Length: 475
Image (cartoon, rainbow, N blue to C red; front, top):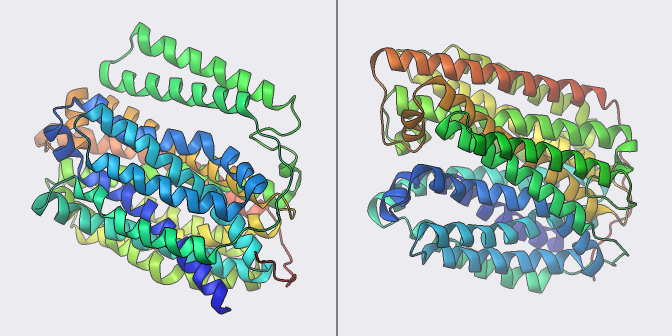
């Protein structure tokens, strides 16, 4: 790796680390945020959901804007916006201010996500992109691990505001480095799909609101109407997308077998995997009466394994292709989920450490290999759009996974208890614990189906050949 490539990779890793750190650090601070800002539980949930929603809706279009106006310019802008949003989050006087600030933060995160994959494709030839995506995955797992550790420490000893303020020095340094070393590649003509983005936003917002409202209140006219309106908006979205030349869901890109199966595999693994992590966190806090920090520490082996193995697996995918490595990774995640399914109210906690380590190995194999397969086969000049499409499908999967999990958990036990377990303020005892474990098992089986579909799609992508094309970098 040349010196300039190393600097570019360091900047991309910082961006990934910052976004990842913020995802885990916020979950651990939930009880304190809800209490300090005097918020009800439904409203507090939108501190997470608004971030996922904004990223899912905007990623593809911001990738195309990067193709038009310069990918590195948009990436560096994302650093600035994310850092400013973090400042607003830390200064929040109310829960609604915090939710709005999280939307600003998400816009910055989406700018970085949408263009980071394209910058990798611009900077590294196809036979080196697996290793590059491995290092980006290292940034993600390291950030998630730091978020787990720092979230409990900062919230407990300093204050929840500083989980956002910690982004300020990182963002400032990364923005300066990015402006100096990450330069624009040649720009291309792209068309934006604003009506499609509005329809997708309406569909995901209505479906998310309806599902969360159902989880909180059982069936009611409000959530039934919201869900039906969301389905209608989703149908209109797909109908519109099939009629325009440059849709958010670029179906022409899916004509490539490898692109089609790789992107769909990302969607289904995201739809299943986040639910697994979330459900086990609820098990540790609600059934086993662990503090949020102690519960999170039991999941660290997975992040450690991912941090060490992601670059290695990325390099192996450069040599052997993504089919075997990514599919084996999905298989490891399936094994980890089966191990989690054996958890009961008196299972030794060391068992969670083993399952977490297995899942970390699986994610370190799947994501670098799968992402490198997508960008290695994306046509030159469409890197931003393809990177944005990949991220959009992944983020829609993550949002769906979160919403499905909340709904299943709330249906398993009394709703007010489920939400309090989610934020770590109530522990379950006796027969309710057993019922909650059974509910978690049902949700894990659903997750297992999604992960298995991802594994099948990963295998069906077939063999691939990557050449060492000339290096393309911005000047």
